[in-house]
Length: 269
Image 1 (spheres, rainbow, N blue to C red):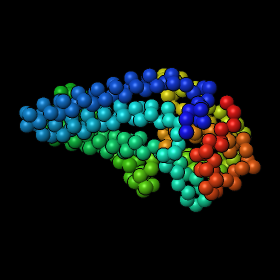
Image 2 (image 1 turned 90 degrees about the vertical axis):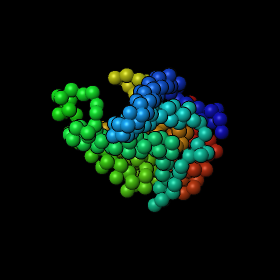
Image 3 (image 1 turned 180 degrees about the vertical axis):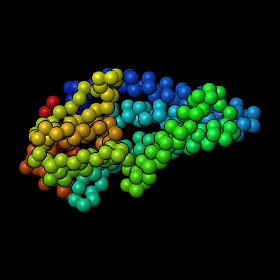
Image 4 (image 1 turned 90 degrees about the horizontal axis):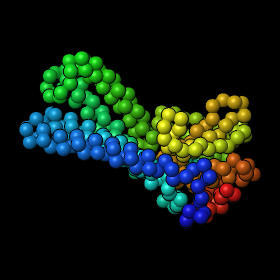
């Protein structure tokens, strides 16, 4: 497949890609700085500090890899390698595997670094240049945050390692993102819209699709650049079945996947 089969909507351009690249480079650069500091601490035989800096640096590198992988999925127009399952007569689109691995790695590295920081600071075994005030406030904050992240990781593990997915069937559409899950019946959706991706306080770099219920409640928001189908194919898939209720029975079997892979979900720009 080519970009001509799955064109980006007019509102989605390559503008946020530069900002994502800058974010990836900055976070990765900070991570490398921590890893170099970890090596120097190891040479000084300060093992606890070195281990802390390794996991902290790894967390920053993973944080930089998140926008880098999102950048790649954003540009993808070929869903042939997408992770799609059929369970309980539902078409389930799983997250991009690279983003999933990076996100889970970030969570694990943060938890380990936070526990080392909290315990090491309280026991005065971790040598870090922080003020006495910070030494009182930051350890319990780091420990509490680590517990929350551990809870999220446990729930992800119970879901089979998936932190989010898009599920479609002839009756409803649902989206999981982290701890949030929203489901709507197709018959209750009154409007289909998308955002204009951008960085800053008034926008996001994510390519979002909004399915607005007729009763005025908050829309179901789908972050397409977290899914293995990529932004453009996911957009056309949802748009097609929103506009063609007579074909939604295809979502209960392989026909929906066949339609997606052949590009027959693209209707008009």
